[in-house]
Each structure stands twice: as C-alpha cells, then as structure tokens.
Image (cartoon, rainbow, N blue to C red; front, side, top):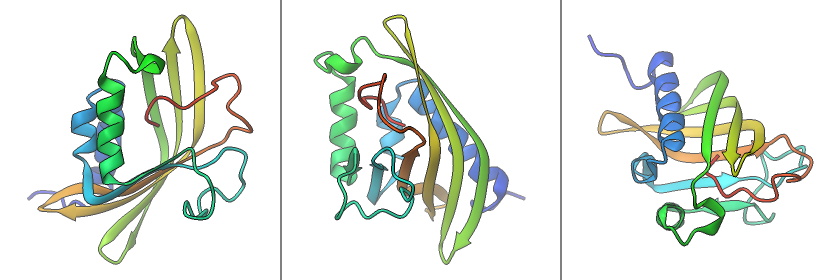
Length: 164
C-alpha cells in the first residue's frame, strides 16, 4: 500500500529532498517542484509579521512568480553570476516541521538554518519557512514557499544570493 501525498512522512521527505536539491545546486530540478502558478518569496528582515505580509504592499527581498523562479535559477547557474561564482557550499537544515491541511492543500511551517560557505567565510541564515503544497498527478508540488528570516539585518551576509 503506497502512502498518500498528505502523509506526514511523505511531506517531511519532500521538504528534505527540496533541501538536498538546493545544497547540490540542482536548481532546474528544484524549480520543477513548483506548480505553474507557484511563488517563491523571501520576506523583508526585521519584521515581526513576516508570515502574513502582502508582497503587493511591502517590498520583499524576493517575490518571484513561476517565470521569475525559472529566470533566477538560470541566472544563478551562469558563471556571470558573480555573487555565486564560484558557487557557495550550503547546508539547509530543516526542523520542527508542522503540517496542517487546508482544503486541497497542505500548509507546512518549519524552522531552518542554512550554513553558507564562500571564499572561506561562513554565513548563517535562520528563520521559518512556510510551504503551501498540493498533490499534482500524485506528486507533491510547491504552490508557494515563503522564507521568513529571523535576522534583524543582513549584516554580515549583505545579500541573499542563494535560494533559502
């Protein structure tokens, strides 16, 4: 008997597999996880209500629709992407995964910490990530992903050139 895409184990495995794709810089496969109307967002730092902010009213660090997600992945894979060439080494750690069902979708929240190593410097990004997942043709897909950083500013990181 196969597990439903709504089973806790299947959802956790999906989130761990997503993290592995990002760490391996398999961005083409990562972007394929999104639905056609998928969104990837990184909320502004220092906001206590980052989980509920509206990107049409507040300037987000990243507010990508499906087309921009694809463009971001293509751009990051090019040697001309100076912020990520040579590529950073990253480790996405996902923990405290919480799951609830909302009609046909699955809402998840999880804590994350991402270690990024580039040019002998180690940077840490930490926060909470919210996913809205949907079963499409029997496989989980990302309808939206919002990263909410628990940072007061982007110092010393300076930017978010990796995918959180």
